[in-house]
Image (cartoon, rainbow, N blue to C red; front, side, top):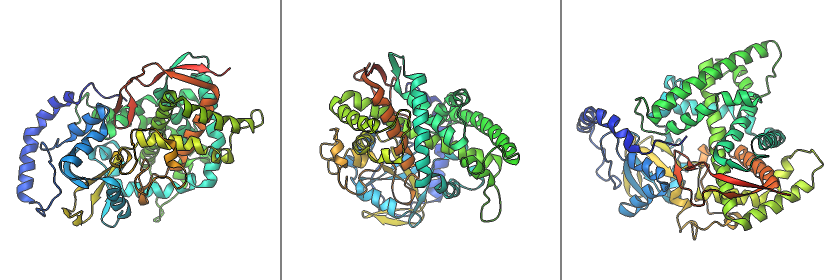
Length: 482
Protein backbone atom coordinates (compact mmCIF):
# COMPACT_ATOMS: atom_id res chain seq x y z
CA UNK A 1 0.00 0.00 0.00
CA UNK A 2 3.05 2.27 0.22
CA UNK A 3 3.20 4.79 -2.60
CA UNK A 4 6.04 5.36 -5.05
CA UNK A 5 9.16 7.02 -3.66
CA UNK A 6 7.89 10.43 -4.74
CA UNK A 7 4.93 11.91 -6.47
CA UNK A 8 7.46 13.48 -8.77
CA UNK A 9 7.35 10.12 -10.54
CA UNK A 10 3.91 11.18 -11.77
CA UNK A 11 5.19 14.31 -13.45
CA UNK A 12 6.27 12.67 -16.74
CA UNK A 13 2.70 11.42 -17.17
CA UNK A 14 1.26 14.74 -16.08
CA UNK A 15 3.37 16.74 -18.53
CA UNK A 16 1.93 14.69 -21.41
CA UNK A 17 -1.56 15.89 -20.63
CA UNK A 18 -1.01 19.38 -19.22
CA UNK A 19 -0.72 21.09 -22.61
CA UNK A 20 -4.06 19.82 -23.87
CA UNK A 21 -5.77 20.21 -20.54
CA UNK A 22 -4.50 23.77 -20.18
CA UNK A 23 -6.29 24.71 -23.39
CA UNK A 24 -9.50 23.05 -22.21
CA UNK A 25 -9.15 24.79 -18.87
CA UNK A 26 -8.72 28.23 -20.42
CA UNK A 27 -11.61 27.71 -22.81
CA UNK A 28 -13.80 26.55 -19.92
CA UNK A 29 -12.93 29.65 -17.92
CA UNK A 30 -13.83 31.87 -20.89
CA UNK A 31 -17.14 30.07 -21.53
CA UNK A 32 -18.11 29.67 -17.88
CA UNK A 33 -17.04 32.80 -15.97
CA UNK A 34 -16.85 32.63 -12.21
CA UNK A 35 -20.25 33.22 -10.63
CA UNK A 36 -18.91 35.66 -8.05
CA UNK A 37 -15.77 37.68 -7.44
CA UNK A 38 -16.10 37.27 -3.68
CA UNK A 39 -14.60 33.78 -3.68
CA UNK A 40 -12.60 32.35 -0.78
CA UNK A 41 -8.93 33.35 -0.88
CA UNK A 42 -6.43 30.78 -2.12
CA UNK A 43 -4.79 29.44 -5.24
CA UNK A 44 -5.82 26.70 -7.66
CA UNK A 45 -2.30 25.91 -8.84
CA UNK A 46 -1.66 24.27 -12.21
CA UNK A 47 -4.46 23.40 -14.66
CA UNK A 48 -5.89 19.93 -13.96
CA UNK A 49 -3.19 19.02 -11.41
CA UNK A 50 -4.04 22.03 -9.24
CA UNK A 51 -2.43 21.53 -5.84
CA UNK A 52 -2.94 17.76 -5.82
CA UNK A 53 0.76 16.96 -5.75
CA UNK A 54 1.33 19.33 -2.79
CA UNK A 55 -1.70 17.86 -1.02
CA UNK A 56 -0.59 14.26 -1.52
CA UNK A 57 3.09 14.97 -0.91
CA UNK A 58 2.31 16.53 2.49
CA UNK A 59 0.83 13.19 3.50
CA UNK A 60 3.73 11.27 2.01
CA UNK A 61 6.11 13.33 4.14
CA UNK A 62 4.12 12.45 7.25
CA UNK A 63 2.49 15.83 7.87
CA UNK A 64 -0.92 15.85 6.11
CA UNK A 65 -2.07 18.68 8.37
CA UNK A 66 0.63 20.97 6.94
CA UNK A 67 -1.23 21.44 3.63
CA UNK A 68 -4.30 22.69 5.49
CA UNK A 69 -2.60 24.71 8.25
CA UNK A 70 -0.22 26.50 5.88
CA UNK A 71 -3.19 27.72 3.84
CA UNK A 72 -5.30 28.51 6.90
CA UNK A 73 -2.46 30.79 8.03
CA UNK A 74 -1.86 32.34 4.61
CA UNK A 75 -5.43 32.75 3.36
CA UNK A 76 -8.20 32.13 5.91
CA UNK A 77 -8.71 30.09 9.07
CA UNK A 78 -12.33 29.41 8.03
CA UNK A 79 -12.31 28.47 4.33
CA UNK A 80 -9.82 28.67 1.49
CA UNK A 81 -9.81 27.90 -2.22
CA UNK A 82 -7.65 25.24 -3.90
CA UNK A 83 -7.83 22.61 -6.65
CA UNK A 84 -7.62 18.91 -5.78
CA UNK A 85 -7.81 15.81 -7.97
CA UNK A 86 -8.84 17.85 -11.01
CA UNK A 87 -11.56 19.86 -9.24
CA UNK A 88 -11.84 23.41 -7.89
CA UNK A 89 -12.46 23.02 -4.18
CA UNK A 90 -13.11 25.01 -1.03
CA UNK A 91 -11.57 23.58 2.14
CA UNK A 92 -13.77 24.19 5.18
CA UNK A 93 -11.80 24.46 8.42
CA UNK A 94 -12.43 24.12 12.13
CA UNK A 95 -15.46 22.90 14.06
CA UNK A 96 -17.63 25.62 12.51
CA UNK A 97 -16.77 24.37 9.02
CA UNK A 98 -17.49 20.77 10.06
CA UNK A 99 -20.81 21.74 11.58
CA UNK A 100 -21.85 23.67 8.47
CA UNK A 101 -21.09 20.80 6.07
CA UNK A 102 -22.47 18.03 8.29
CA UNK A 103 -25.71 19.88 9.11
CA UNK A 104 -26.40 20.99 5.53
CA UNK A 105 -26.23 17.54 3.96
CA UNK A 106 -28.78 17.30 1.11
CA UNK A 107 -29.73 20.95 1.73
CA UNK A 108 -26.78 22.97 0.45
CA UNK A 109 -24.23 20.19 -0.02
CA UNK A 110 -24.26 16.60 -1.18
CA UNK A 111 -21.83 13.69 -1.24
CA UNK A 112 -19.11 13.71 -3.87
CA UNK A 113 -16.30 11.33 -4.74
CA UNK A 114 -13.35 11.97 -7.04
CA UNK A 115 -13.58 10.69 -10.60
CA UNK A 116 -11.07 7.98 -9.65
CA UNK A 117 -13.75 6.36 -7.45
CA UNK A 118 -16.30 6.23 -10.27
CA UNK A 119 -13.79 4.59 -12.61
CA UNK A 120 -12.78 1.99 -10.04
CA UNK A 121 -16.44 1.16 -9.30
CA UNK A 122 -18.04 0.87 -12.77
CA UNK A 123 -21.61 0.34 -11.59
CA UNK A 124 -21.62 3.88 -10.18
CA UNK A 125 -21.22 5.20 -13.74
CA UNK A 126 -24.66 3.83 -14.59
CA UNK A 127 -26.23 6.01 -11.90
CA UNK A 128 -23.97 8.13 -9.70
CA UNK A 129 -21.77 7.70 -6.65
CA UNK A 130 -24.39 9.56 -4.63
CA UNK A 131 -27.22 7.22 -5.67
CA UNK A 132 -25.03 4.17 -5.06
CA UNK A 133 -24.21 5.45 -1.59
CA UNK A 134 -27.91 5.96 -0.80
CA UNK A 135 -28.63 2.38 -1.88
CA UNK A 136 -25.80 1.09 0.26
CA UNK A 137 -26.96 2.97 3.33
CA UNK A 138 -30.42 1.44 2.95
CA UNK A 139 -28.92 -2.05 2.90
CA UNK A 140 -26.61 -1.67 5.88
CA UNK A 141 -28.87 -0.98 8.89
CA UNK A 142 -29.97 -4.61 9.31
CA UNK A 143 -26.35 -5.66 9.64
CA UNK A 144 -25.13 -2.78 11.77
CA UNK A 145 -27.99 -2.45 14.23
CA UNK A 146 -27.22 -3.22 17.91
CA UNK A 147 -28.75 -6.71 17.99
CA UNK A 148 -26.71 -7.74 14.95
CA UNK A 149 -23.53 -6.20 16.33
CA UNK A 150 -24.00 -8.07 19.58
CA UNK A 151 -23.83 -11.35 17.65
CA UNK A 152 -20.59 -10.26 15.96
CA UNK A 153 -18.60 -9.87 19.19
CA UNK A 154 -18.03 -13.60 19.75
CA UNK A 155 -17.15 -14.11 16.06
CA UNK A 156 -14.66 -11.24 16.24
CA UNK A 157 -13.13 -12.73 19.39
CA UNK A 158 -12.80 -16.17 17.80
CA UNK A 159 -11.11 -14.78 14.66
CA UNK A 160 -8.82 -12.53 16.73
CA UNK A 161 -7.67 -15.55 18.71
CA UNK A 162 -7.11 -17.60 15.55
CA UNK A 163 -5.26 -14.73 13.91
CA UNK A 164 -2.93 -14.17 16.87
CA UNK A 165 -2.30 -17.91 17.25
CA UNK A 166 -1.35 -18.29 13.58
CA UNK A 167 0.59 -15.07 12.97
CA UNK A 168 1.88 -13.73 16.33
CA UNK A 169 2.37 -16.58 18.80
CA UNK A 170 5.84 -18.15 18.69
CA UNK A 171 7.19 -15.14 16.79
CA UNK A 172 9.91 -12.96 18.26
CA UNK A 173 9.35 -10.07 15.85
CA UNK A 174 6.37 -9.11 13.66
CA UNK A 175 5.41 -6.24 11.36
CA UNK A 176 2.13 -4.90 12.69
CA UNK A 177 0.46 -3.07 9.81
CA UNK A 178 0.17 -5.97 7.32
CA UNK A 179 -0.95 -8.26 10.15
CA UNK A 180 -3.60 -5.77 11.27
CA UNK A 181 -4.88 -5.62 7.69
CA UNK A 182 -4.91 -9.42 7.54
CA UNK A 183 -7.03 -9.58 10.71
CA UNK A 184 -9.60 -6.94 9.71
CA UNK A 185 -9.86 -8.27 6.16
CA UNK A 186 -10.40 -11.82 7.43
CA UNK A 187 -13.09 -10.47 9.75
CA UNK A 188 -14.83 -8.56 6.94
CA UNK A 189 -14.77 -11.63 4.70
CA UNK A 190 -16.28 -13.72 7.48
CA UNK A 191 -19.06 -11.31 8.42
CA UNK A 192 -19.95 -10.01 4.93
CA UNK A 193 -19.33 -13.14 2.81
CA UNK A 194 -19.17 -16.04 5.32
CA UNK A 195 -15.63 -16.85 4.15
CA UNK A 196 -13.48 -18.22 6.97
CA UNK A 197 -10.71 -20.15 5.21
CA UNK A 198 -7.51 -18.06 5.61
CA UNK A 199 -6.17 -19.29 2.27
CA UNK A 200 -9.34 -18.19 0.49
CA UNK A 201 -9.13 -14.81 2.20
CA UNK A 202 -5.45 -14.45 1.27
CA UNK A 203 -6.26 -15.12 -2.40
CA UNK A 204 -7.51 -11.59 -2.93
CA UNK A 205 -6.36 -9.69 0.15
CA UNK A 206 -3.13 -8.40 -1.41
CA UNK A 207 -4.82 -6.66 -4.38
CA UNK A 208 -6.87 -4.70 -1.83
CA UNK A 209 -3.72 -2.88 -0.78
CA UNK A 210 -3.17 -1.56 -4.31
CA UNK A 211 -6.86 -0.73 -4.61
CA UNK A 212 -7.06 1.20 -1.34
CA UNK A 213 -3.90 3.13 -2.20
CA UNK A 214 -5.20 4.26 -5.58
CA UNK A 215 -8.80 5.17 -4.81
CA UNK A 216 -7.95 8.73 -3.80
CA UNK A 217 -5.18 9.53 -6.27
CA UNK A 218 -4.53 11.68 -9.31
CA UNK A 219 -6.71 9.94 -11.95
CA UNK A 220 -3.96 9.38 -14.53
CA UNK A 221 -4.47 5.93 -16.07
CA UNK A 222 -0.94 5.13 -17.24
CA UNK A 223 0.99 1.96 -16.37
CA UNK A 224 2.76 2.29 -13.05
CA UNK A 225 0.58 5.02 -11.56
CA UNK A 226 -1.33 4.28 -8.30
CA UNK A 227 -4.60 4.86 -10.19
CA UNK A 228 -3.73 2.34 -12.90
CA UNK A 229 -2.73 -0.27 -10.31
CA UNK A 230 -5.99 0.32 -8.43
CA UNK A 231 -8.10 -0.28 -11.56
CA UNK A 232 -6.25 -3.54 -12.29
CA UNK A 233 -6.63 -4.67 -8.69
CA UNK A 234 -10.37 -3.86 -8.63
CA UNK A 235 -10.94 -5.90 -11.78
CA UNK A 236 -9.11 -8.87 -10.29
CA UNK A 237 -11.04 -8.69 -7.01
CA UNK A 238 -14.34 -8.16 -8.79
CA UNK A 239 -13.80 -11.34 -10.82
CA UNK A 240 -13.26 -13.34 -7.63
CA UNK A 241 -16.32 -11.74 -6.01
CA UNK A 242 -18.52 -12.61 -8.98
CA UNK A 243 -17.45 -16.24 -8.66
CA UNK A 244 -18.45 -16.13 -4.98
CA UNK A 245 -21.79 -14.50 -5.88
CA UNK A 246 -22.59 -17.20 -8.44
CA UNK A 247 -21.80 -19.96 -5.97
CA UNK A 248 -23.97 -18.31 -3.34
CA UNK A 249 -26.91 -18.14 -5.78
CA UNK A 250 -26.67 -21.90 -6.25
CA UNK A 251 -26.36 -22.52 -2.51
CA UNK A 252 -29.40 -20.37 -1.79
CA UNK A 253 -31.43 -22.16 -4.44
CA UNK A 254 -30.45 -25.53 -2.92
CA UNK A 255 -31.01 -24.35 0.67
CA UNK A 256 -27.31 -24.80 1.46
CA UNK A 257 -27.02 -21.15 2.51
CA UNK A 258 -29.20 -19.04 4.79
CA UNK A 259 -31.01 -15.96 3.47
CA UNK A 260 -29.94 -14.08 6.61
CA UNK A 261 -26.41 -15.37 7.14
CA UNK A 262 -24.61 -12.30 5.80
CA UNK A 263 -24.98 -9.17 3.69
CA UNK A 264 -24.28 -11.05 0.45
CA UNK A 265 -27.37 -13.21 0.86
CA UNK A 266 -29.37 -10.13 1.78
CA UNK A 267 -28.27 -8.32 -1.39
CA UNK A 268 -29.13 -11.27 -3.59
CA UNK A 269 -32.62 -11.64 -2.16
CA UNK A 270 -33.69 -8.01 -1.62
CA UNK A 271 -35.50 -6.04 -4.33
CA UNK A 272 -35.68 -2.25 -4.48
CA UNK A 273 -38.88 -0.17 -4.36
CA UNK A 274 -39.46 -0.98 -8.04
CA UNK A 275 -39.14 -4.71 -7.56
CA UNK A 276 -35.72 -4.80 -9.25
CA UNK A 277 -32.89 -7.00 -7.98
CA UNK A 278 -29.27 -5.98 -8.21
CA UNK A 279 -27.17 -7.65 -10.88
CA UNK A 280 -23.86 -9.37 -10.19
CA UNK A 281 -21.78 -6.32 -11.11
CA UNK A 282 -23.72 -4.05 -8.76
CA UNK A 283 -23.42 -6.54 -5.90
CA UNK A 284 -19.72 -7.07 -6.56
CA UNK A 285 -19.08 -3.32 -6.46
CA UNK A 286 -21.01 -2.90 -3.23
CA UNK A 287 -19.27 -5.82 -1.55
CA UNK A 288 -15.97 -4.42 -2.80
CA UNK A 289 -16.74 -1.07 -1.17
CA UNK A 290 -17.82 -2.76 2.05
CA UNK A 291 -14.66 -4.84 2.24
CA UNK A 292 -12.55 -1.70 1.81
CA UNK A 293 -14.54 0.27 4.37
CA UNK A 294 -14.78 -2.72 6.70
CA UNK A 295 -11.08 -3.32 7.04
CA UNK A 296 -8.89 -0.46 5.88
CA UNK A 297 -9.70 2.24 8.43
CA UNK A 298 -9.85 -0.22 11.34
CA UNK A 299 -6.50 -1.77 10.45
CA UNK A 300 -4.96 1.70 10.45
CA UNK A 301 -6.45 2.45 13.88
CA UNK A 302 -5.25 -0.88 15.28
CA UNK A 303 -1.72 -0.27 13.98
CA UNK A 304 -1.52 3.12 15.67
CA UNK A 305 -2.98 1.72 18.90
CA UNK A 306 -0.04 -0.73 18.92
CA UNK A 307 2.37 2.13 18.15
CA UNK A 308 1.21 4.37 20.98
CA UNK A 309 0.92 1.56 23.53
CA UNK A 310 4.57 0.71 22.78
CA UNK A 311 5.57 4.33 23.35
CA UNK A 312 3.46 4.94 26.47
CA UNK A 313 4.02 2.20 29.10
CA UNK A 314 1.71 3.82 31.65
CA UNK A 315 -1.16 3.87 29.16
CA UNK A 316 -0.38 0.25 28.23
CA UNK A 317 -0.51 -0.74 31.92
CA UNK A 318 -3.94 0.83 32.37
CA UNK A 319 -5.29 -0.91 29.26
CA UNK A 320 -3.83 -4.25 30.43
CA UNK A 321 -5.37 -3.81 33.88
CA UNK A 322 -8.83 -3.16 32.40
CA UNK A 323 -8.63 -6.06 29.98
CA UNK A 324 -7.33 -8.55 32.56
CA UNK A 325 -10.23 -7.73 34.86
CA UNK A 326 -12.59 -8.67 32.03
CA UNK A 327 -10.59 -11.82 31.24
CA UNK A 328 -10.71 -12.95 34.89
CA UNK A 329 -14.51 -12.74 34.84
CA UNK A 330 -14.74 -15.27 31.99
CA UNK A 331 -14.92 -19.05 32.16
CA UNK A 332 -12.11 -20.96 30.38
CA UNK A 333 -12.79 -20.85 26.64
CA UNK A 334 -15.70 -18.40 27.02
CA UNK A 335 -15.77 -15.80 24.26
CA UNK A 336 -16.26 -12.07 24.72
CA UNK A 337 -19.80 -10.72 24.64
CA UNK A 338 -21.52 -7.35 24.30
CA UNK A 339 -21.42 -6.63 28.05
CA UNK A 340 -17.66 -7.14 28.09
CA UNK A 341 -17.24 -4.52 25.39
CA UNK A 342 -19.15 -1.96 27.46
CA UNK A 343 -16.59 -2.40 30.27
CA UNK A 344 -13.69 -1.36 28.01
CA UNK A 345 -14.16 2.37 28.66
CA UNK A 346 -10.54 3.32 29.21
CA UNK A 347 -9.39 1.20 26.26
CA UNK A 348 -11.86 3.01 23.99
CA UNK A 349 -10.70 6.40 25.28
CA UNK A 350 -7.18 5.34 24.31
CA UNK A 351 -8.35 4.27 20.85
CA UNK A 352 -10.15 7.61 20.41
CA UNK A 353 -7.02 9.56 21.34
CA UNK A 354 -5.10 7.44 18.83
CA UNK A 355 -7.64 8.33 16.12
CA UNK A 356 -7.43 12.00 17.07
CA UNK A 357 -3.69 12.03 16.45
CA UNK A 358 -3.76 9.66 13.48
CA UNK A 359 -7.26 9.84 11.98
CA UNK A 360 -7.76 6.95 9.52
CA UNK A 361 -10.19 9.15 7.59
CA UNK A 362 -8.25 12.31 6.82
CA UNK A 363 -11.33 14.09 5.49
CA UNK A 364 -13.96 13.81 2.79
CA UNK A 365 -15.51 15.69 -0.11
CA UNK A 366 -18.92 17.26 -0.64
CA UNK A 367 -20.34 19.21 -3.60
CA UNK A 368 -22.23 22.50 -3.50
CA UNK A 369 -25.82 21.89 -4.67
CA UNK A 370 -26.46 25.61 -5.13
CA UNK A 371 -24.68 28.96 -4.73
CA UNK A 372 -24.40 29.95 -1.07
CA UNK A 373 -22.48 32.26 1.26
CA UNK A 374 -20.18 30.92 3.97
CA UNK A 375 -18.03 33.04 6.31
CA UNK A 376 -18.69 36.02 4.02
CA UNK A 377 -17.43 34.22 0.90
CA UNK A 378 -19.41 33.03 -2.12
CA UNK A 379 -19.32 29.29 -2.81
CA UNK A 380 -20.50 28.59 -6.39
CA UNK A 381 -22.75 25.69 -7.27
CA UNK A 382 -20.73 22.68 -8.39
CA UNK A 383 -17.62 23.51 -6.37
CA UNK A 384 -16.18 20.59 -4.44
CA UNK A 385 -15.96 21.07 -0.68
CA UNK A 386 -13.46 19.32 1.55
CA UNK A 387 -13.31 18.98 5.31
CA UNK A 388 -10.13 17.90 7.08
CA UNK A 389 -10.08 16.03 10.39
CA UNK A 390 -6.74 17.61 11.22
CA UNK A 391 -8.16 21.14 11.08
CA UNK A 392 -9.70 20.37 14.49
CA UNK A 393 -7.84 17.30 15.78
CA UNK A 394 -4.53 19.16 15.98
CA UNK A 395 -5.99 22.57 16.68
CA UNK A 396 -5.06 23.92 20.16
CA UNK A 397 -8.38 25.82 20.25
CA UNK A 398 -10.18 22.45 20.13
CA UNK A 399 -7.66 20.27 21.98
CA UNK A 400 -5.23 22.02 24.35
CA UNK A 401 -1.67 20.73 23.92
CA UNK A 402 -2.77 18.90 20.77
CA UNK A 403 0.48 16.91 20.38
CA UNK A 404 0.12 15.41 23.87
CA UNK A 405 -1.42 11.93 24.16
CA UNK A 406 -4.17 12.19 26.77
CA UNK A 407 -7.08 9.69 26.88
CA UNK A 408 -8.75 11.81 29.57
CA UNK A 409 -9.98 14.11 26.80
CA UNK A 410 -12.71 11.55 26.16
CA UNK A 411 -13.97 11.16 29.72
CA UNK A 412 -17.37 12.50 30.67
CA UNK A 413 -19.04 14.37 27.82
CA UNK A 414 -15.82 14.26 25.79
CA UNK A 415 -14.65 16.81 23.20
CA UNK A 416 -16.85 19.69 22.02
CA UNK A 417 -19.24 18.85 19.14
CA UNK A 418 -17.75 18.78 15.63
CA UNK A 419 -14.14 18.77 16.89
CA UNK A 420 -13.52 14.99 17.01
CA UNK A 421 -14.51 13.64 13.61
CA UNK A 422 -12.63 10.41 12.75
CA UNK A 423 -15.91 8.96 11.44
CA UNK A 424 -17.25 12.14 9.86
CA UNK A 425 -20.53 13.55 11.11
CA UNK A 426 -24.15 14.37 10.36
CA UNK A 427 -26.30 12.14 8.14
CA UNK A 428 -23.16 10.84 6.44
CA UNK A 429 -21.36 9.75 9.59
CA UNK A 430 -19.70 6.40 8.89
CA UNK A 431 -22.40 3.73 9.38
CA UNK A 432 -19.69 1.28 10.43
CA UNK A 433 -18.52 3.32 13.42
CA UNK A 434 -19.81 0.84 15.99
CA UNK A 435 -18.53 -2.12 13.96
CA UNK A 436 -15.07 -0.51 13.98
CA UNK A 437 -15.27 0.07 17.73
CA UNK A 438 -15.95 -3.62 18.30
CA UNK A 439 -13.11 -4.95 16.15
CA UNK A 440 -10.59 -2.48 17.59
CA UNK A 441 -11.50 -3.32 21.20
CA UNK A 442 -11.64 -7.08 20.60
CA UNK A 443 -8.17 -6.94 19.05
CA UNK A 444 -6.80 -4.81 21.91
CA UNK A 445 -8.21 -7.28 24.45
CA UNK A 446 -6.55 -10.28 22.86
CA UNK A 447 -3.24 -8.57 22.09
CA UNK A 448 -2.47 -7.03 25.49
CA UNK A 449 -3.43 -10.26 27.26
CA UNK A 450 -0.73 -12.07 25.28
CA UNK A 451 2.09 -9.56 24.86
CA UNK A 452 3.95 -6.46 25.70
CA UNK A 453 6.08 -5.18 22.79
CA UNK A 454 8.87 -2.82 21.77
CA UNK A 455 9.23 -0.80 18.57
CA UNK A 456 12.19 -1.89 16.46
CA UNK A 457 12.36 1.46 14.62
CA UNK A 458 12.04 4.05 17.43
CA UNK A 459 11.57 7.07 15.14
CA UNK A 460 9.75 5.41 12.27
CA UNK A 461 8.34 7.90 9.77
CA UNK A 462 4.57 8.11 9.30
CA UNK A 463 3.18 8.59 5.79
CA UNK A 464 -0.37 9.06 4.52
CA UNK A 465 -1.40 7.04 1.45
CA UNK A 466 -4.34 7.93 1.64
CA UNK A 467 -4.53 6.71 5.24
CA UNK A 468 -1.72 7.11 7.78
CA UNK A 469 0.73 4.23 8.11
CA UNK A 470 4.20 3.64 9.50
CA UNK A 471 6.69 3.75 6.63
CA UNK A 472 8.13 0.32 7.45
CA UNK A 473 4.87 -1.21 8.68
CA UNK A 474 5.67 -0.88 12.42
CA UNK A 475 8.03 -3.76 13.17
CA UNK A 476 7.95 -4.72 16.86
CA UNK A 477 9.67 -7.20 19.19
CA UNK A 478 7.12 -9.29 21.10
CA UNK A 479 7.50 -9.89 24.83
CA UNK A 480 5.01 -12.63 25.79
CA UNK A 481 3.54 -12.48 29.29
CA UNK A 482 4.83 -15.21 31.57
